[in-house]
Length: 304
Image (cartoon, rainbow, N blue to C red; front, side, top):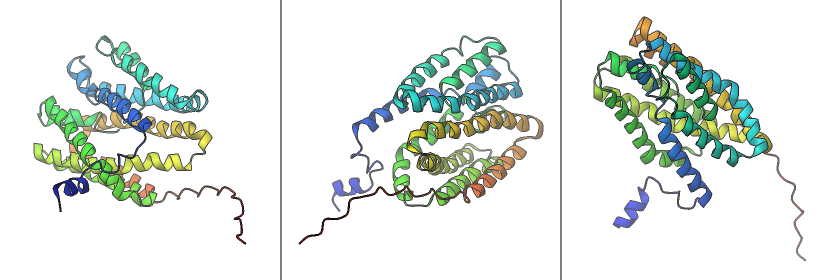
């Protein structure tokens, strides 16, 4: 096998060259946007170390983010259907970036709450315990530096960049149930294993495990919603989907920090495994999307 053939075969981004220019524009905008959302996982550390919040109050602020997202997501989804999805994406990118600038200026709990609500309205609700309890567990309880927590996201991002395209291509033929269940169980195993992880290498391994789950589960969830939604109501359906994330974001980080404070890390991560495993089992029972109605085609012309 020639070097060029070898590189082509094992290229982690093989299959992307045929995508249209509009997708690459969307990719670039999403890249910039997601670089900004990395501020959210560090919000708990910022509030506890820089603003003097207790762990429970810091988790409550993330819960407030989820509540605001829960309320606004369906409305914004319907607005996107009527005003245009591209226009809404442009507005969201601009305003969410401006909202993040409000945090360094917020000194009081009321000001922090207002900044959090503003960010939730202009963005959307990304994950669960790695936004709230995980930074406290690693930095405060296990004694790792905040930079170590940042490196865990570097592992997460690096795996996604190098592996997600190939993984999605390899699993694209899977039924929705299989993708949702498999991704959910990887997430359950990754977060659950934190109960027994105290060294840096062990923590990094758990991140790698739940990252595999993220790479399988999140595209499968979005794809499922897009397939079951009527073409003229996709924004509304995605708003409902985001609302579910808002509920999770509203309850998960607050509840996780509360359990960590009162019962310790073993109970927290064991409970996370149990909840995620139950969710994966529920995913395994979702019905397959109904096939689209075939468009009537003209009768074939019979040759003489």
